[in-house]
Image 1 (cartoon, rainbow, N blue to C red):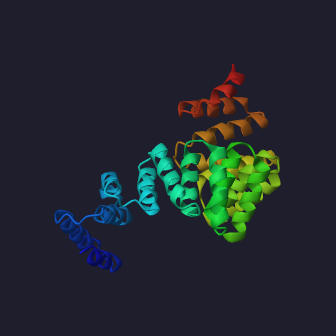
Image 2: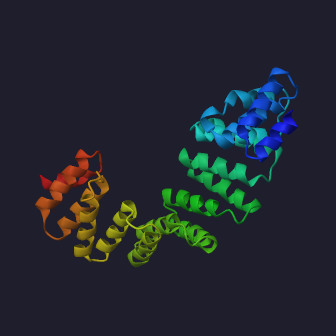
Length: 278
């Protein structure tokens, strides 16, 4: 019955597969595989129906190969149980030390928990076993940006671009690293490349405008910030940054109005600039 369920799933009939699995569970087929298969199929097709309890039952009944812990960890990751998923990915790696996906997803969970050094280690380990894992380079670079290790972040993004030159996130994040290293021309080029790949992205346009302002082209920077703000989105950072450019052009009143708007939109750092208005 479980073999038939597997065939149905491979033939893109998950409903039929689940029906067979449910019948297997009613018939008390031993070993826990039925519970695992039900959880796995739902995880693959409808995560809202996937059950941690099914994974638990499978393990309790002795069906506990490394991939059972991995997929339970993946479901926990999707449900934002980061500590729980890290535990499961660690158990996965105890059973299969070369499973690159477990390293990658554990690293991603650590990144979300701001364990940046831990995430860098895991992304590096993922690359040890799969050096074509472009996302490992990207997220390792993101983690390095967060700890201000910008030079090594650029190296990670360079490696990512060698494998995928069509991902706008790589260019945007490399541009951020270059910006903080005061390579404003390099940052500008990267942000422009990112915008070519995803036109009209307001976040990247904001980043580009900051680089342009640093290069002294205040008119273009102001025009870009105006464009962002006139979309009607409450983009607090655009108000903050437009205020800084207005201040540089001698429009302190306009700058103060923008900083007040940024604060109104919840950007606490705006308070540091508003103090200049008193």
